[in-house]
Image 1 (cartoon, rainbow, N blue to C red):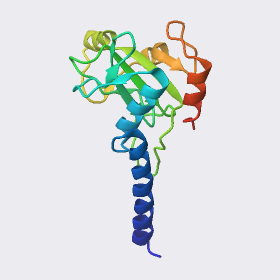
Image 2 (image 1 turned 45 degrees about the vertical axis):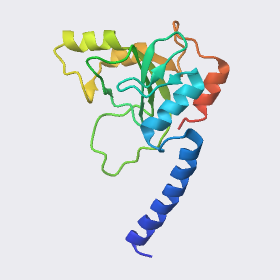
Image 3 (image 1 turned 180 degrees about the horizontal axis):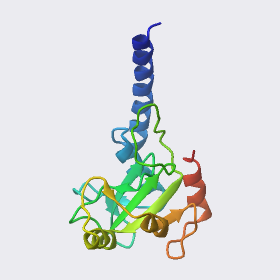
Image 4 (image 1 turned 30 degrees about the horizontal axis):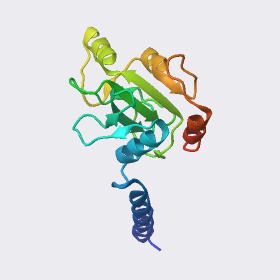
Length: 168
């Protein structure tokens, strides 16, 4: 079997798995859609179809859900965006070339950012707001709600168990 044959076989297998995932979540099995669906299941977020907002928490605050297979300190932000950014992230990693690496879909940590505060911090430091905005490590640490326990955002044992099932 040639490398091309093997890759074609694996892509066919992946397509079958993606079709199964799509039937579960009702959308294409892309990382963003899967992350939104997982967040909705864990947190009871009501998903929306609005641009720039994926849904609302029960209290009405809007949220944009991101799933990054590696936490590289970068966050896709919008000038006029949601109230909150909920980030599902894989292992912490330096932003570097992806050559020779993999990006398995895992959730090792979760972060909840106040959108206005993070945009204000970037502006105060003269940083760009948009795709792959560089967010300070201190802000990532302050926003972590899983696995660390956050004093202002309580996760139940059931929510923790659900998230742990997606871990590395």
